[in-house]
Length: 194
Image (cartoon, rainbow, N blue to C red; front, side):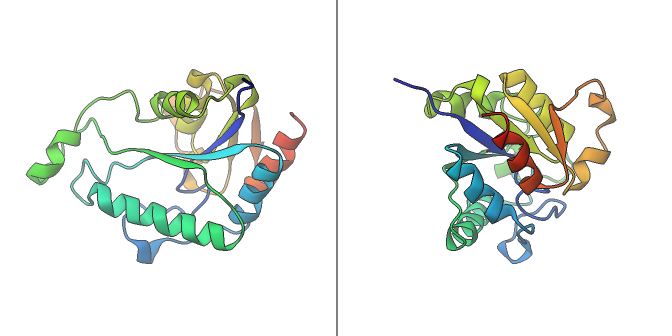
C-alpha cells in the first residue's frame, strides 16, 4: 500500500496569529491566507496535520478541553473557507515547575518525547496515518518546528508570520530547507518539490 504524504503545520504564528499562551476562543485570529494555503496543500495531495506545543495545560492556565475548544473553532473557521485539517496533535507538557500551579495540572509537568523540538507528535502522526517522511514537510514559525521536523526526517519550512523565527538562539545550528514569508509562499516552494 502506498504511503501518504503530509504537511505538518505549527498552530500559533503559522495558521493563527501568535497570542502568548492562547487558550480562549475569543482571542483566536486566523492569519491572512492560512485557509487558502491549507486548501492548496490538500489540492497537491498532502494530508494537513497540526503539530502544536500547548504548555497552557501544564501551567494550569487551561484544561485539555479548553485547548480542544480552540482547535475546534480553528477547524470550523478553516472548513468554512474550504480548508480541511486532517488531524491535530498537541503536547500539554512542560518541563519547568511553575509556582502556584493547580494540583490537576501538575501531572503534565514533565520532560516528554512529544514536546517540540522532540519529534514525538510527528512520529505518532506518521504511524497513525501511514505517512512517508521523505515526501513530507514540517512548516512552522519557530526553529523548534524546524528541529522537530529534522529529527522526524521530514523537510522543513520556516515561515516569518510569527515571532518564533527571531528568538531561538539555542537552535542556530539548524537550517530549514526553505524560509518563506508566509504559508502561501511555503505552498509555492512545496509545489516545486513534488
